[in-house]
Length: 407
Image (tube, rainbow, N blue to C red):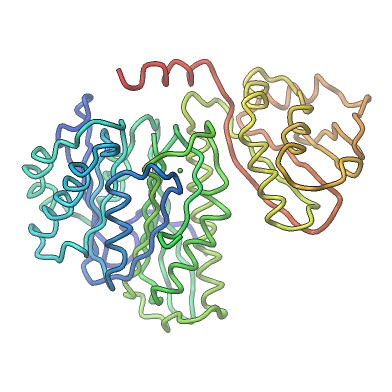
């Protein structure tokens, strides 16, 4: 597997565009389109927040269609908490693209991100759709990655190539979201917002694509947290058009596992970009839990630790307060023997067998935490289960950003 340039337009048959529609007060690009030149199978997972935004509800419905061709997304307005009007506006947004490109309305998926409770300016969008369609290009991935940003400071995109049954398959991705980030996304039949788009030219059945997206997200996007707040708009889409001409993946065999491995790599890479760019963040924090009874137990504990505001403040203050790691692990609702637990902060062991290491060099650990990446490991000593979560520190800038966000 190799990393290549191109983001969501790296796979065969995908185009993207982005323009200024006047939704954002800043005047920055705020309307983007991802288009597949041939019919593609699609899968999506969405926020489990009960207060789902209108575009989320519409996309859940439209994903029942057999194939899809386009995803339209706006930033600057979440189109959430607008009642039936919001639902109608999301439908109009899809309709403008469908009409302009001679597609069925259900072939178009929709995403929105921004402030909750403001009506979406659909007339501005309608007027700009012709320009948006005409701007589609194979070089449009970076433009799309920029247009979906809200409080993000950098674009997040990546693409990879992998050999699959003698054919080269490409997977591309782009995402945004550095505040109101604590996703717990699930398949529709069953958390500033996390919005992600993945494209691939692999040939795969819709059922297997849904399984792969869910499996990959559980180890990536569903394991990041910036502030512990679940969004109303979290959405992750994947489109697969089959243009790589590989033997179609219809079951969980060798080809599926190769594809899933590449997809997980891409999703984890983007998820780490999101956590590292958390609002006001100065450090990326990786929490690895091993020795749990099950992988699920390890993930629950790792994610619980990642949501500790006390720990995140300590990391910002470059204070090696490992007690906050222990406290979070113990409050995760997972049964384990604390007298078997070890904790490491970077290379230093700070807890051994449930007892503090009186001899650990606190100043050495403090110096380590001054770096841009902080690794924390918890070994429960109770099994083979493991899991990793990513978060960032809490800075004064985070408070400033969110005290002024809606104004």
